[in-house]
Length: 190
Image (cartoon, rainbow, N blue to C red; front, side, top):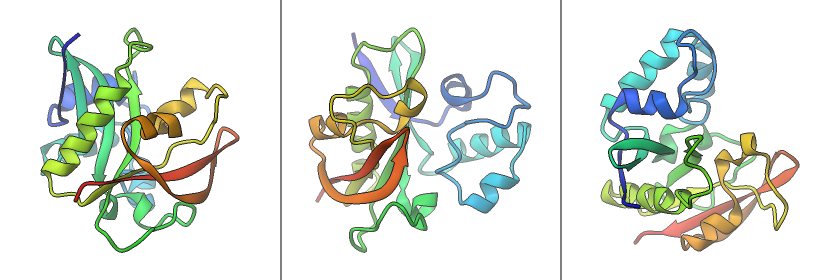
């Protein structure tokens, strides 16, 4: 299978992967970490989609999309940490003052799961960060060992997935998701 991972500049493809089923719904669109809390909490219904449309038109866009035969099959939110809610997150520490990028969400579309797409998706997110001058990239996955992670909470990834991509544990966090501790994983790009 040939997978192409490209910047998320196509709003319709982003909406296919992380948008709600109804445009007036107040869910997802992968905004909870991308925006500061105040702005995120003020967006409702169709305004959420319009904000994502704006983000897709910015440089850099809000993430990357994996395509299989021109069909959008997976999404990763990746952007400079300073532009995300992780900039002020008290549970996820700052390791140093480096202008790192954050990967906060990886989602594979139903019907395409269990095909190993998360690995090229994560590699594409790292390449996107590197191409945009990131000195390092971080992820905040769950440290679940061998235990299964609930599908609705798997969007942050697992420590093992990040380790396979060359990331190393840089710090513990006080964040817990679905009963699992989250760790700060980092990949130096310098």
